[in-house]
Image (tube, rainbow, N blue to C red; front, side, top):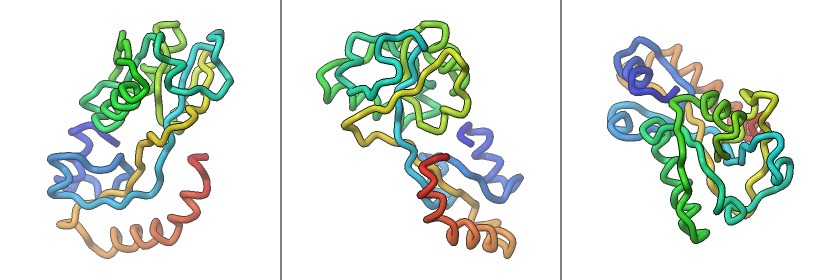
Length: 176
């Protein structure tokens, strides 16, 4: 869950609990969230790319064309990618963006560029895309459980209790 409309549904009480990315303004002022898992960032490449299937350092991507998820949807990750590339001595050549992860992967598959994506995106991976680990970095996207404290009834509390009891198990799955 990430779009403003979806977060507004949580704020308005149309939904009680959501699995979402960590809260950002303005939702961090009215909603509550607990981080459950840190999803490491990986590299999505076209299947025939010379680096496909190998662990990749960020500096090996300096000459690549990048496709990213729209900045307004993944502000923290987008800014993290820019900072990671900057620390490696280059500015990413962003040639395209998409409003969905599946759109990013379709652009990668079509040869438009490479992408840095949360590892969980691998479940959307089309056959023409290879996911490779990004080495020597600590960039990740958090996964949180979020709720509106104004709609904090017994069912929400029971669900949050269940999630908290299983937090270690969720983290041990490494996103699988």
